[in-house]
Image (cartoon, rainbow, N blue to C red):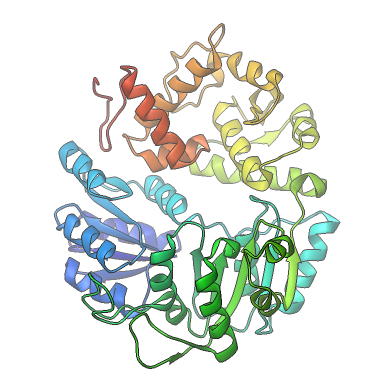
Length: 455
């Protein structure tokens, strides 16, 4: 991933940038907001912005909104400056990282914001077929359509194809078509000229130009508005884009990979997706099977995630007991690989010692037995970083969940993104839970706090 740092590198933010580089990120730097905006408009691209809280964050947030630049902003500042943290979140920063910077905290924030995991674990024959096809078509420039249920790893496959292609030394740019409003998506993809709309104070290079000579992933493409579908079709046919408000087309050389969790043929029949665009994208089709249909991948994936989260949380490497493996293999995994990852993450935190027992496998959408199992977990199986005073036995699942969430947030110094990553839930779910707990009068830590404050 690529990060834009805004602020003086002589301070703590410079140390944060070095941590990000060691974690594999590429870093761009700007001394101030104006210089940062020039970089974002120029097509150099950034997956997120890390800005010193001393800089005018509100000006940056407003400019990004006015110019339709959809890049998340992370604020940074001293740990005890709670007021600055709250204000940064209030005006639109996605997260707040307290200084001095913590390597694991920054790694968790980068992973949660970018949602980037390039591991390709494949042992099942059905997935091996997909892998072999991906390897075969990767060197070409053909458009590829990757389909499959949510959570099966469509973006992971897209990144794998890019890394095996002749474009691997150039950029891989991902756009989530479902997450960006239609009126912003056009500018996000194609860029705009100065004066194209209110707030367009300068030319902005879009994702197609950022990905020039590389690969552009159009994630959940079936969510794209039909008007933009027509414009996309022209780009594929003519290999040129029109910036919003532009008078001259711009040539682009981009390999397109599109994904969808829908049955696209049904969408075409309903008139929601253009048939001609479908045929243009569907030169090569890769369909990812649901995890329940690739059972040989379950344990290898579980072992991979167990090692990953043991290392991330600073605990010893863990393996699964035979009953735990049986439990994992017998579950249907409606959330696919994403649900498996979250389940293993929780198991790493809840398990005691180097063996993950069956009692630590708590399934989000599982049966009542699994929920009862969560409520009955003994005290010694609570994450070692959390309070050891949480008595689970005899309490409701809702009460146990509340205390686990609040104490995890406390452990993370109030950092919502890091806590959500540890808990294996989305940041939106976490914030909704915290809003509920605040309303019920429970103590919820603010970003940067070492102890929760009274509500």
